[in-house]
Every structure is written in structure tokens, then in C-alpha cells.
Amino acid sequence: MLKKCSLNTDRRDSMIEITREVRKFIREQRVERGAVVIYCPHTTAGITINENADPDVKQDLIRRYDELYPWTNSADLHEEGNTAAHLKAVAVGSSQYVIIEQGDLLLGVWQGIYFCEWDGPRTRNYYIKILKEE
Amino acid sequence: MLKKCSLNTDRRDSMIEITREVRKFIREQRVERGAVVIYCPHTTAGITINENADPDVKQDLIRRYDELYPWTNSADLHEEGNTAAHLKAVAVGSSQYVIIEQGDLLLGVWQGIYFCEWDGPRTRNYYIKILKEE
Amino acid sequence: MLKKCSLNTDRRDSMIEITREVRKFIREQRVERGAVVIYCPHTTAGITINENADPDVKQDLIRRYDELYPWTNSADLHEEGNTAAHLKAVAVGSSQYVIIEQGDLLLGVWQGIYFCEWDGPRTRNYYIKILKEE
Figure 1: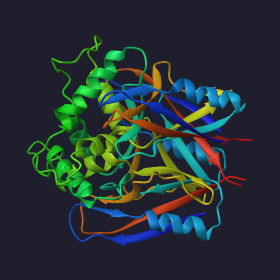
Figure 2: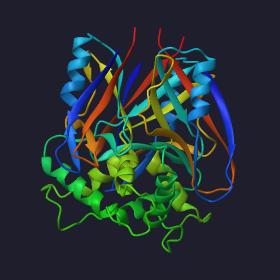
Figure 3: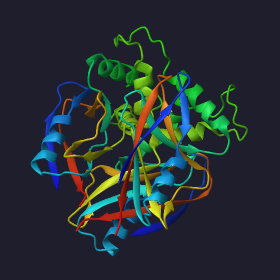
């Protein structure tokens, strides 16, 4: 049970909530119990789980990441110039793991799953892999 | 094989070792081989694996995280004022994955599993999910 | 399906690509579909997934991590003096999870799997655990 999804971003840094897409795939596959992995195959993007209520948290995270990992650092060697984006990708991680129970994601009340792009705008992919339990 | 556990924290930042609780559940379920996921359903808390010998490592990590992610940052928009706690939660991650072999956690000698709270004191939950291998 | 691997590092900080070792084990075990976890049992080392094309990305990451987590911080309590290495280990994470599809790793074109040592030179181990799907 594997699904490849796509999305578009419209600026350099963005966090796009994908909880609904993950939940939809679990329901379509009628999985009662197990786990799901959301995987990002890009090296300047990643997946994280964080607050889904106040969109300001997302804005603060993006801005503070830019303070921690400034786009320009005169000692960087990488000629593409996007070393900061690679570092942010490592910081959030390339995948997230969520438990499935009673046919749904076992997320906390305020948790959402986010695709994070750090070198957009781009068209990107991610994978949803369900691990069904008998 | 899913267990919901609770704990209380008594200050703003804390790292509480939960290795014993995870190990106990594996033994109770008599799982010989597989894997276990420890999952945190909160957005200002997370799970990490690190040194279990010298408690000073924990203190240094908490203090250095506070230097990297200062509680107050005048540009933060989030009205609850705990943006730093959300960032620390993303930094450690919302889950950890450990292999089970010969009926026990395949941890390194110095590794312990920690629940990390970044906006306490609170009563919190975490899940232990065992993935048994036949 | 569990394999213990070893490697040697020759300096304090290093990122060693281990994608080939992981791929080899999957082929030897003739796994068509499932997932694989690469796990690091050390507390000053970890596993990450990032760019495998330009080696400068690796150099930039190592140098920028040293800026974020300086080796010397006068407030550190840990007597071994390697608090920075523990922090870097938490930052990259102790494991990575990759999907297996059609008998191979479902990595992105530019993704490689790296063992990261932050307090070498050392001889180190890591585990490759395959989760086969029927």
C-alpha cells in the first residue's frame, strides 16, 4: 500500500499541511490498525509534525529557521548556493511515522503532518506507505 | 500491541527517561523480535534517544537548546508565546524507532529513550507501539 | 533480517555514505517490498539522509553544525567535554526509515544515507533492519 502524491509550492520556504491526504489514503485502503510512513524523496525538503491550529506557529518556525540557517554564509562551498535548504531538510527529517488505530491516524489534537520545502518554488513528490497489521 | 502511558513534569523544560517503561511493555507482550515506536502526540514535546549515563548531558542539552531557541524572540507572531517550545519539539522529533531482538531493545550501551517536554509543567501522554515479527 | 555493520572514521566529524551497504543487504535477502531501518547505537553519532552528488554539501553541513553547536561552551557541565557531539547526534537522529519497492530503496535521485560521527576518530557500528512485506 504505497501512494505517490504531488504538490506545488509558490515561494522559497513553505510548510504545506498534508494530513488530509494521508487520512484519505488510510480510509480508501480500509486499514484498521498499523502504521503509516510519510517519506520525502528530496534533499532540500522534508516532513514534520507540528501544530495545526494557529498558522502563526508555521510562520515563526520558517522565520526562526532562517535565523538559525541563514541563506548566505560566506564559508559555504556548495556552488548551487542552497546549503541552508539542505540543513533545514536534515533538521526536520526526511520522514515521519504515525500509528494507525481504529481506522484513523493516532495524532494528537493539535498535530498536523507538514511537507516542508526549503528551496522552492517547485513541484514536489512525497510517498505515503501504509504498514497494515493483521 | 499499543500502550498509552502518562507522566508529569515539574518545570518548563525536562527530559524524562522512559526506557524502563518501553522495555517492560516488550517483556509483558513476550515479543522476541520486531521493532517498537515511541510516539508523542503533543506539539511542544517530543521523543529522543541519547546518553543515559551522565545526567549532565541532559542539562547541557536543555541549556544549549535554550540558547539556540530563545524563549523570547520579538519577531514571533504566535500569541501563546511558546514558539520556542514548538521548535524544540521539531528538533528532537515526535517519535523514535528502536529494533527489538532476542526479546529486548537493541539499544547501544549508553543509549536511553527520553520524553522531552519544552513547555511544562504538564501531564503528558505517549504511545508505545510494538511491531511484532513472526 | 538484521545485519550489524562496522566502519572506521579518521577525524572528529565525518559523514560516511552507507547507501551501498544498505542496498546490498536488501538484494542479498531478495526483498521485493517493505521498508528498512538504519539504526545507530551510539550517542555521539547518528544517521541522516541527504545529497549524494556534490560532496561540498557534506562539508558545509559539518562546518555549519560546528557553528551552531560549538565544541567549547563554558557553561557545559558534562566532564567528557563532548556535549556538542551529543547535540549533533540528536539533531540528525539515531535512525532513518526508507521504503523498499521493486527490490530496491525508494530514495530520491539525489538522496544518500549517511552515518554521521561527531566525536571520532572511532570504530563504530550500525544496524540494518529489513521489514519484509508479504
